[in-house]
Length: 331
Image (cartoon, rainbow, N blue to C red; front, side, top):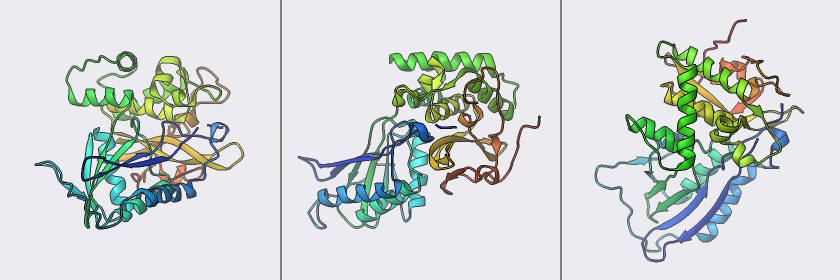
């Protein structure tokens, strides 16, 4: 099984009229991979690239930049480790927060934590659109504002979470809303258990999606490609599954990590975790979709599985939720 990709880019610039610095950091563009459609990407070097770029552009200590404070009623999260930063990023991405304020002892510690998450493969773009903007003051302790934007799928999920009857004006969001609504109306019933919902959506995506390598990877890495065109790569499968699950009321995450390719090499890959009855499980829809495509044949090898099962051929950061239990489909 050869399946998808990520990139990490960074640029920094100073505000011309204010007392903070803006750094634009692209966490991960919306594609991950198994090898045949991968980039030749050395994750161990990405953090160094970030740090090298930052070191030449950040102002020296004591440059006189003003204090950055959260608005009234907002708190600043104290960050003392890469794990702290991971949890803030996860909470922000899955609550679709427009921004978060964090505080570190000094700015170089933030770049170190960011590098550690990058090397661990724990930075990913769950519904993120564009770049994460970073505002910070040059003080000790250093206050940093992380500014997020979200893609069409994230915007649709957020609307469902925050409105009783969401409406959309952006064309791709209108299409996604209709596609998601149609799938849930046909395949998910109110009397289903969360486990039954997970299996129903898993099976729907496997039957109705063909893993595709030869076209636009950025588009194939979206829920729109999977749900509209029936084509996708692992990030697209994961995003579509997460959207359908979250909107149907099942807590779901996207995991960025690595998995074996056809030559038994670990390459970047994306899959999901679902929370059923208070217990987290791994789900890899992509790996349960046979290659070449077999139409109605559905595998359940990677549905609701434990860390112990997944670690045979997947790697991921231990910052993601622990999946201690195994609940395989018995055939």
